Length: 293
Image (cartoon, rainbow, N blue to C red; front, side, top):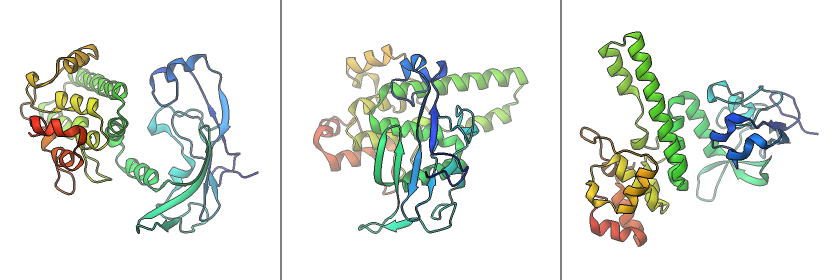
């Protein structure tokens, strides 16, 4: 029986269900997870170039041998990700990359986990992102935001933005209690990542609006225009404003902030430029001018 090359333990993990899971959003049917028993499942990543096996151990799974509970990213012990050195196997040192027909690098593996078995999966994008986030952990929330926009998950987007507002409120209260000086507070505000206007620094510098348009997420696009553009409120359909009110989303003052419609990707294209290339459902948006800052 194969074991993890890092911790030497069987390639299984324990999915723990508790009250905290009902709002973490990472497990399927998280809202009902409190009534589910803990389950022991496979967690096996086999690197095809060398045959070595590792635990992946993703949130919110608890590895029986690496850690007691994975609740916060800063506390995670990830067998493969923590020992991964970009293109080499962390165990045997063999080069893991192969080249696709398009000339791009890939790291192929077989994965067996609670979702089933996947053969020949390229995990290089995931490894690259996780390595990047180990260096820049503050960007994890912003990158999750881009992924939610890509998936069209409005509920998750609203939840993430709500958590961010709550965190900012806690910081302000802490600052008041500690007597935060103006200079220090200004630096904190400057360093804080603007999730709504974050651009994919690993990929092609696309904004959330670029991604929403590229993946035909009209509901997300309306939401982004409402929260991160200077588009007049009169330009929004009543149902969009009504939905925002139901979701308890309030539009902040946009003066002095970058209009998300003006952001450009690495090719110098705005979201409107992407919509022009794609056409289809975005033609009406282009005609109305709502994608132009």
